[in-house]
Length: 236
Image 1: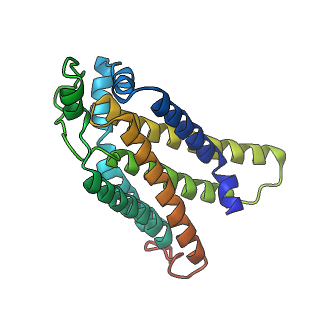
Image 2: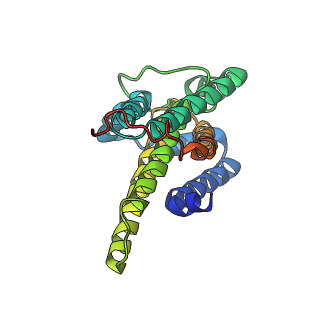
Image 3: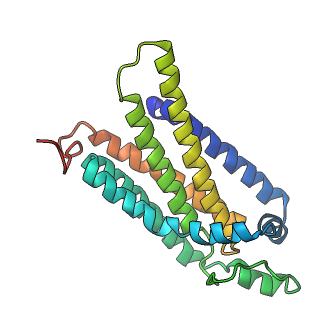
């Protein structure tokens, strides 16, 4: 686990900073006011980008699992798929237990004088708000991809020269930073579109991150097994 934390220190550190910042904002700012402050920054380009980017969570994780299954190790594909399946199941259970109202319904009941800035063409949801399933998927995908990518980078080749070590470290940092930003943008897309509150995104982020760590702890035990290292398109 120590090597796991060391390899993914950037992603883990940024995620903790992000969760602490969001947690403080949730404690200090009222629910409605925080949502309005975060979502009331619409631009034509932002409307187009977030309208389509938010849907990446609905299909790309499964496409990535298929790519890993075809071109990588079976165990890695199973790990990535398990992160998505288990985090999605956890989120759906919590959603249906709480059945919390989405922003559109909440503002109609609590702040009827407020007109939410909506994006044309986006079908608005009304219930099952907490936690955000899309955010869960984004963070589970990004963290799992970070784990697999940094693992591959660290095992790419023995590096003896200082310049080689720096290049390897820089590549790892860049990958983790990019994946983290993509995950945060995915979570923010749900607030921007007024499909979720900041609390929902916070909860979805936690579920995605925690389930990914649990899945890694389980699958890392089998990494030396033959089935884990099987490659469907192995060179003959």
